[in-house]
Length: 334
Image 1 (cartoon, rainbow, N blue to C red):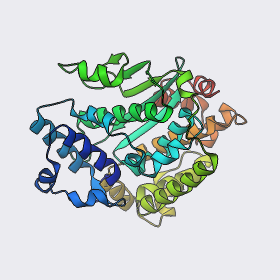
Image 2 (image 1 turned 60 degrees about the vertical axis):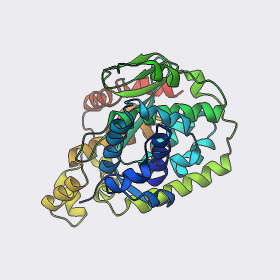
Image 3 (image 1 turned 45 degrees about the vertical axis):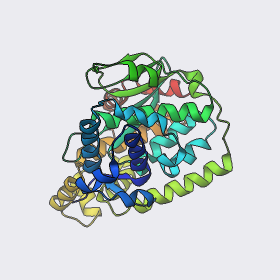
Image 4 (image 1 turned 135 degrees about the vertical axis):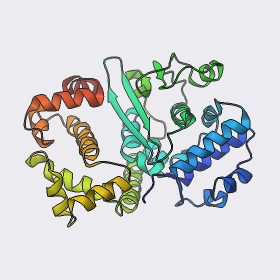
């Protein structure tokens, strides 16, 4: 069975954050069936559920439910694997976040990121998915704390978000959250998200370098292809991208093009923790973001390119994905 995994680079950042909080990970790893030495192998991957158990035991051992926020103190580009360097060589934070969304599966497969314009500014939305175990809230808190600290470190400026949203209830002690985020906090929100002003997202990065950005794009793209190529999920996405302009692809057609029976396709997708319908929805959402960034494409053309026979279905799906209309989203990109 194919499990979601986390890169050793991100796992090492988590371990440093936990050790800073007094957790002895060298002894804890064998207890959880994890290989401590593999943290130094840049190509190693750790199972998502193993990382969830690590967070839960760390909270138990430290007595500190806010231990994930320590990630803000271990900022270094390598924690994001090659993606960190691709982000740094981008022209602006906005361009950097687009790269982060594109390549985030390299860092951790259990995370889904989306980034889009809103009437107030920009929203970086995060969803963490568990495998067999529900994800630990510390995982999302660590990701958001690290992401914001990385932005501040790259720009050398005190980036203060408009709002930080958390899915869970408010913790008893809010002080660590106030210190790390220095922004209004909202709990019991529908999604975990960081909301930024347009000014902050248009900040030019002092490390910007177009040639390096292209080089890192190639490295990240190659890694993603190598890493994803063996997965049925990746192969189905490629088939869907090819079929969508001809209308909504049927599962039996996709299975036939992959020389699989429908039942085998369904089982193999299930083993990778995804359904055909969810994959179709995710692929359409990702393509919608790419198409809307191309000003020459009309909204009607985009609806048909995404396989929607009726444009009103596209508008409904888009509002579900991003909480805004395609027109509002596109205006936010300008």
